[in-house]
Picture 1: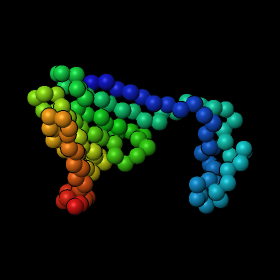
Picture 2: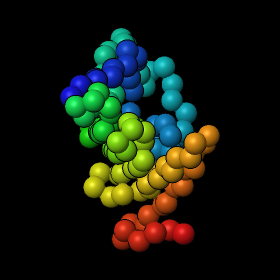
Picture 3: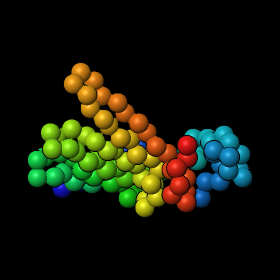
Length: 121
């Protein structure tokens, strides 16, 4: 298992700012709406898990992740090739890509899932 923490170094909006990005104070942010100095802030924390062959089996970003798909899993065949790659929003399955291999090529099929777990197509 390996963990990665990502940070930004920037000036941040003051906590009492009510402006910007559709806020009630209006969309335009001025210089006085920012803190005077740059600060570090954690933007995400990602955990990677690997199997006994060194192949990635799990990518998980539980905290501060900027998107909705925050967990990915991989499954492999006995030749070490990816056979399934899945995306989750927390515990909810979003899609699965299945891989079928041929001598000179491969086929990838993605199946999307509804919130209730049924196939989308």
